Image (cartoon, rainbow over all chains, first blue to last red; front, side, top):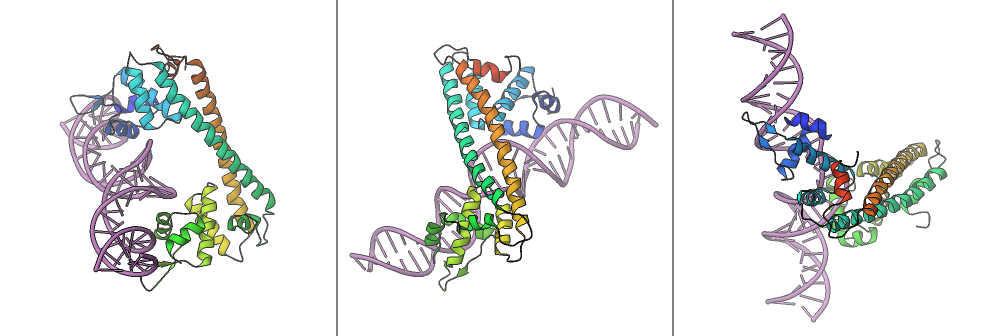
Length: 131
Length: 131
DNA sequence: TCTTGACCTTCCAGTGACTGGAAGGACTAT
DNA sequence: ATAGTCCTTCCAGTCACTGGAAGGTCAAGA
């Protein structure tokens, strides 16, 4: 199967799939004409990668997950540990963004937003407003 | 004032400050020996940049904010618009991460995480579990 | 058969916002 | 004089792609 078709089935652009090959994530067979040849199994792995990436796993984490996926003798504890770490990271990011949201929404509601040049947002950013 | 001192006062590493100069965000005077010379006003701007960046504004947005900050005749509406756009982005990111958290925490709680090789996380990632 | 257009190939460069490191000059303290 | 810390520039690397150029391959239609 050509890269375009594989990409469609896996939900990934060909560019990305070639990149994954470059970094050794998934190296397909080649057809006689030099085109990459993806098997159904490859497409499965690509979809696996697509899902993992969209869940926020780094490419390196995906590499681990993929090798665990292919390893019949693996222990699910390893996989769980990776997922738990990621979950904690996501939680931390959510909290950071929430406090960021508080500050921004405070700024926005206190700015009259008309033609007057004085602006509480810039005042706050510049540190005028009592840090 | 040397770059190290300016960096300490503004909460930014010298490398970053030099980078900001490279991209034309803040170009300081030079001392006779060739060292960069930061005024108190420069430090103020650097702190402004540090705050804005940590609030999630892109460098380009910071550039806009900084020029509005220096523009006595600006309208606060412009500033408010930038902040509102950013607020909406932050909100969207929070929502994305929350749904990501749901999936991950579902995965984690359903994985027994022991020596057994079968693992619901990998099953889910591979698409076995009914997509 | 020719041609068009879509697909494929490789390679190189750019993104954003830094960060690391090398090589060398300047300054301070002892 | 010397050691150590700061400063300079320049180049390269990060992460995960993405864009584009130049050229090869293939399938369909006139």
